[in-house]
Image 1 (cartoon, one colour):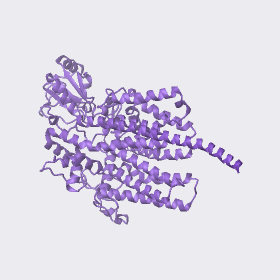
Image 2 (tube, one colour; image 1 turned 90 degrees about the vertical axis):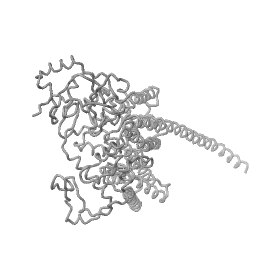
Image 3 (cartoon, helix red, strand yellow; image 1 turned 30 degrees about the horizontal axis):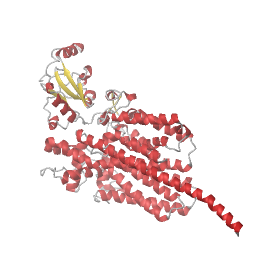
Image 4 (cartoon, helix red, strand yellow; image 1 turned 120 degrees about the vertical axis):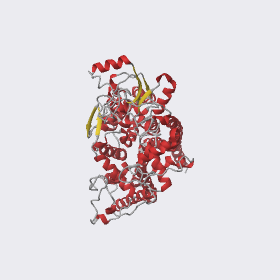
Length: 634
């Protein structure tokens, strides 16, 4: 008995240190998590402060004009036809405080949308009614949408922490918070960052559902809850932007990959998971309908008027038919809101139009398959690209478990599908923001370089130093140009002054610098009178209190000339949007022969053309005296 007692005492003494070490390890993990979350809160707070500053100081951009007006229309009329090319979630969030504060004019009425887009017209009318207050009112509408960029930052941390560790999670959050593309669009009344954030959240909870199905310790009830939650968030992602419609094909494919690679081969289990995924899809469709107030839900397919070639056949310039009309398929009810379906159709119609695209100083009809790859290489900080390349190299060379590869598939596959889909639509080679939904892949994968469990080189002093320097370079490169992040181009591209030679559109000039031009003019009264060629045709700089004249077109201008119109250049002060200098009409291309005196932001170039400079220009082009004067009356 005594001998047995001694054995038991020895066993307990051996086990006690093991339990103590496990408790200590668990306590250290809790402390690390608490510290990481404090850092994440600080990063998100700083990010929101930067976004607030940009929201209050950047002027109204192109797509904000129709978006806020459509949001107001959605609330006041319960009709979702205006700006139907995008779902209503983001614009309704932005419009809510504008309505609550009573900024909508009593006599403003939103037009009823047809197959022709009237949303820009409605937005311009609303802004003109507000006058100089339009910038302040738009800033009010921008503030609530900041919640989406905060969500994106937090879920980058959450997903990276789950895949790697807390340190990597903090880095992923930091990469989101200082990404120039996020700082550009995160404070705007547009859909891009909101869709990126909500798509990230939906994919994260889809991954959590996959984990519950693969875990033997999880109860069937928890997997049903996870599926329901994933479906709700998929519906919210769809209500932010229709880009995420691809998930209805991607998710079943990823689930099939998980099921085939699972060690548990059970037909019963596979059937239950398939049912759960179907329920998640059904829940998402219900959320979409709820977001539209079930407007037009259940309408027969044959009753729609489609504009795109795959769905409708054009009969005239303003009427499009339906290829399903009179067929058996045409009798089927569509379980989606009418304007959601027609919005996708209108987007596709836009992709079919042959318009001029710009890349590397060249204009051509149609685009380039590599446009978005090229755009990513010049718009993403070099440090971010290097970190991404290092993370891929580490994943390939290290011995990753099958579970990690399957988890990475949930992150990688949707990003690749969206990137390939967007790149295939060469008619929309105008905006690098279309690949924003792919950016969380870069942030979360790149953060793995900083994980304590990463390959040996990152644990060595030289590896830690190199990766830390890359992170500092990333942050400094982005902050250096803030709050003018729209015109961010990395060092490889030559920075913001060389960017317009490479790419245009919302990647350079979206009308964001008008208020900076106003401040410049207030500080330089000698620059009056001034000619202004602003980047937004529909909005007058007089809204910002700028008195100006038109900038005379050059000899090379391809746009229709006006009788009696002077030909440029002429001596004087001019503020010309970079968009107007490089546009395909070549209306103000002659400014490329002059050196700007100053800049308002990086998209408004300010020139002071002197008589001797102008005279030298006219001699260099051998212009006749007649050409140098007014355009003839006849």
